[in-house]
Image: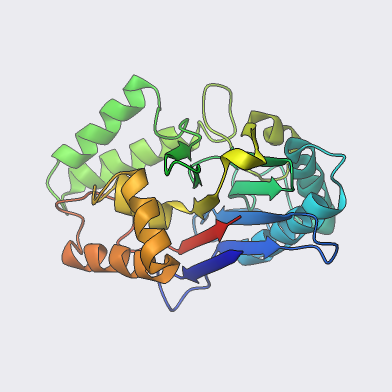
Length: 281
């Protein structure tokens, strides 16, 4: 079995809010993969005493432990239980009802000799390769498929001159409109303090014989496909298999540095936290 992972912060002066781990039980009965992308809140505006890395470490740890110790539970049930466990760890000190309470996107994969199960919540990506080399992307596309009025606001922001007061005002309005859709009906969902979000995840199962390898990427790495259009998901997976996760992260950084202001490739941050896990089963 080949397992490789790489992660690095978007800004070396700030903690990395991504989380990546692979768990291989001593009994040798399969394993699991966990990838989280912590959501950065506005400064001082999340109602919580704890940092996003604190949250992702606890949620990620709970997901890893439960996914291999509770094979009687579905992955959605495991995510719900992990959310509850994490909320209980700080519910007495923090306002978990705050809309920007610490939260994260989730990719969770579990395998044994018979099956490979997956769960994807929000905009991190899972790639699944079969014996014939075909790569299937598993995506939760609700964040990219926002209502037409929100997409129109985004396009308006991009059309305004960079650095202008008009663009700044329009950008704030667009950001507020997107935030209003977070963990809301007809919006998009992340793992925060409400376990019901787990039921919104994209889930599925493959026969073990139909999967040779999987890869999980936070959107800071998925930029290679979704922002910079350097290739499609199959080409991304091929790069991972050939050169490894660190090379893919390095390539994304090279593309970011070539367009530092986001002129050619608009994006919310010049650099984002990046994490990727590659596992040949």
